[in-house]
Image (cartoon, rainbow, N blue to C red):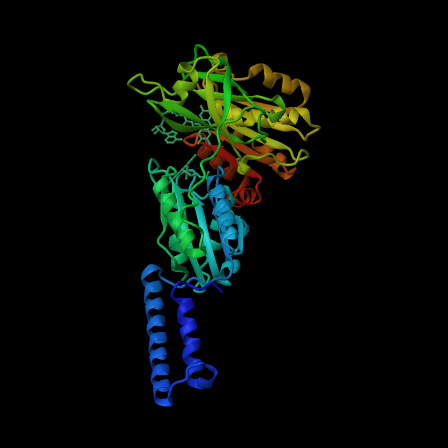
Length: 473
Ligand SMILES: Cc1cc2nc3c(=O)[nH]c(=O)nc-3n(C[C@H](O)[C@H](O)[C@H](O)COP(=O)(O)OP(=O)(O)OC[C@H]3O[C@@H](n4cnc5c(N)ncnc54)[C@H](O)[C@@H]3O)c2cc1C
Ligand SMILES: Cc1cc2nc3c(=O)[nH]c(=O)nc-3n(C[C@H](O)[C@H](O)[C@H](O)COP(=O)(O)O)c2cc1C
């Protein structure tokens, strides 16, 4: 039980009042009975006044009084940001003495919420207003029902980016569903546009109101390490598409570990400030260096993209790069004995390459790569490596789709459809699907073919089981 600033004095006064009325002799008040009665009445009045003030204060601050038992923190996270905030919030509440449990939203079903209590939701949106993969099971299961959540008190932090049409889409959807089911918000939904520090401070204040977390314990800035740009290679000279570069970065001190599927966040200098850009790691920790595949963005006015232009053009070889590795659970590998179907286009090959490089070192189950780009002549990225993996048995099958070569199979999704029987066989054999690359065009196209070939329920089940993973941007 946690006492608010009014609650504790009110209770003490209440005890005093009761004691004064019921056992006046126990108190060292050597006063006549009538005056003792008046004192007791005064104390009772004070007690009632204090209780009313406390209740009014709580009502005006929060919609409901928060039960002081444990707090559950649930996250929906595609690339780890919401998960990190959830874990940090849980730590802060624990340090303030509040018992806290943290889990992925998808690990829960509706009945776990019906029991009531207090839940905090840290919710990202991915795709085009979609739930992250680790919340997909919850969206498809619990959120299609109407459980009675009237005993649930909750707070919700929605992470998003106003650049997307459905800003904080999934966070909003979850909030609406919770209210429709009778759950009671302890504060209004907090929306965070691209990590906006003001909104994150609001969340910190909400935490402090809930559990006594000091508001000063503001967000901890993530640590960036210094890396050196060691090499840069133009991978697709002559391409009609944007130039793609392989970058090699070496750590200045000891390299942190990472897992295939992880990302880097790079601080890009822009007129005395920095902005962050995210890239998929194309190498393994055993390589001891980080390799990236970066496409140079070029805007219609000829200007290069802030991050990609700096990395592929402006930063000189040997430049210091401030970088941190971002864990991306959602795209980590399956056990080595699980066959992998790797599907990607363009620089999406980066995220797939890290998996293949790791698998090449293990006695792993076979992999099948489907890769799409513009032309075989100019855009067959990592060709030598892919051919070597085929020869060495790391890749049991490769399907290529070059959209500008005039072949009947134009895009990876067409290549996937053309191999429908093989796809069914691999999935029946327990294979996982990993998709990396374009959010627009490729990822929805691949998804549509999967649904066409395997059936919508089977695809949903694969996603729920973590056998269908995506790193698309
Ligand atoms: C999970 C993930 C993995 C990625 N992996 C790769 C990869 O392996 N290879 C690759 O080439 N690209 C990758 N990207 C894309 C990359 O992060 C950049 O968006 C891309 O390089 C273009 O950024 P720019 O600064 O060059 O262009 P800009 O012109 O600066 O940006 C293009 C547009 O996107 C917006 N924008 C892009 N990123 C951000 C951001 N982080 N914060 C705020 N606004 C932003 C800008 O406002 C602008 O409107 C990945 C993105 C994500 C999310
Ligand atoms: C591929 C992709 C799709 C996204 N789609 C949306 C969207 O539809 N609406 C939105 O508000 N934010 C969108 N975002 C922004 C993310 O919600 C935001 O960056 C969030 O902080 C990511 O958190 P996470 O690391 O926990 O997944 C998208 C981000 C990416 C990379």
